[in-house]
Image 1: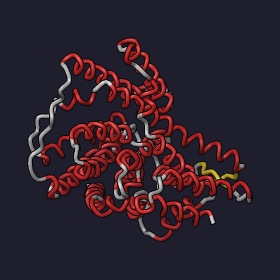
Image 2: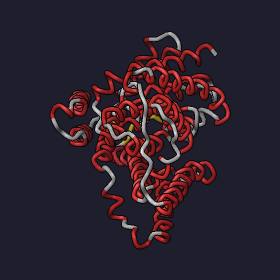
Image 3: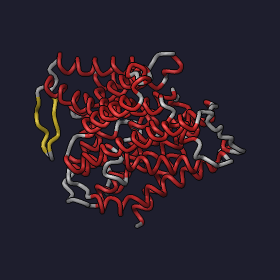
Image 4: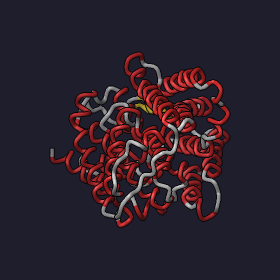
Length: 416
């Protein structure tokens, strides 16, 4: 019954544009019913710990997974709030003036390289939010902007897999002592670059990227642009501070983001006291997307606690002859099932030594595989909410590009 409700809920999310129903509604209903059934019928639930499946109280386990989901939710709220402040004071308009390209194709390469680089530093989710915000200022045509966003997602997810702080799943592997920073970068950097470059090259051949692009310069005064650029630098610095704090003192990313957001608000309040209104910032945040994200995470966790993801992974293990094929299949699964519980189950099931090739493969496939479908990654879900991207549009226009990039990077891993 829980699996059936999950499938029905996902179908409603996929066809949201056809039925005119905001996707956060089926997402929350799906999560509530799934966990309600588990608690009401006292269905046995489990938590993975190394290679042992331990029995847990369902209510306590729900609180545990709510806490895990909240880490991501509050991280997202903090990042969106910092971006809203920067946007309020025209920070991104000051950045637009730095672009001097004249063709759409060149602009695509530049914006994808920025996405790739940023995601390794401030994680792929935050990088996607930042770049989409910039893109809204430059590409006014909605249809044209969707193509840019689709390819940006591939680049951001590829940029996150080679950095221990660039993607949630990579961070999980890093914290669990499955990979070390130096060896992760040495093994995954080139495949991720290959994934980004191949995808961008194929995407750039689409007819929509033919012709010139005219980047309209901002008509703001020099003083306003200087203020905006100052806040842009400060805001990005505080975002960068989050992984640094995590690395140096161990503060969780969501707490680091809340701290950065608070200090950024303090600085903004001191410098722009007369024009700083916190209410305006929160009005700009798309809370329906945040609620959608919460529902998705809790729904997937319900499948995790009843052992279905564990059984699915075990089924794959017994069906294939080598772990390299296993990782490839897991990458494809991560394109439509959230990669976080999938990687958590993988960490629990396998006992390969630190920096074994298996873990490097998992780091690559779980991140880049999430680009094949838009619902396969947190950055894709965020973009879906920010720009109301249709699941089937992405499937028809972008998925094949993401798969080719994913495949080339994977083949490099096998060969080299």
